[in-house]
Amino acid sequence: MALIRFEHFDPVSNMLALQQELDRFLRNPSFNLGVSGQGSYPPVNIFDDKDGVVVIAELAGMDAGSIKVSGQGTTLTLSGSRSV
Image (cartoon, rainbow, N blue to C red; front, side, top):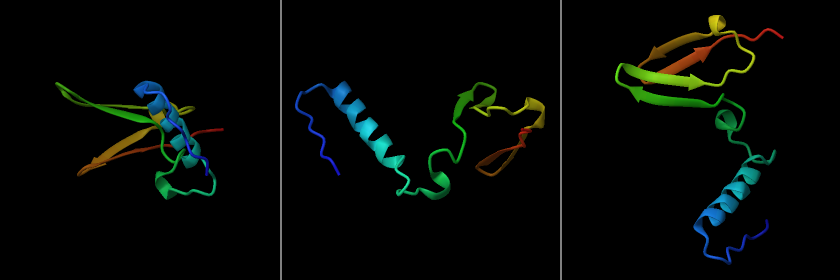
């Protein structure tokens, strides 16, 4: 494993370099995060709104009418099928 040198005190570039190294490490096929690994779930943003909660999920290739949304307790489930 290569060591990273942070020679200059530039917090932004140092954090970006650290993030790139962590991303590279986590993409390594020999490192397995199980069901929480990269590509296991679509990117999701959840926001509080004055009327409730807003969920924005990237579901590429999915028809909005085919997506089923359900919730139980603190678990939100998005499911559906994609036609190829």
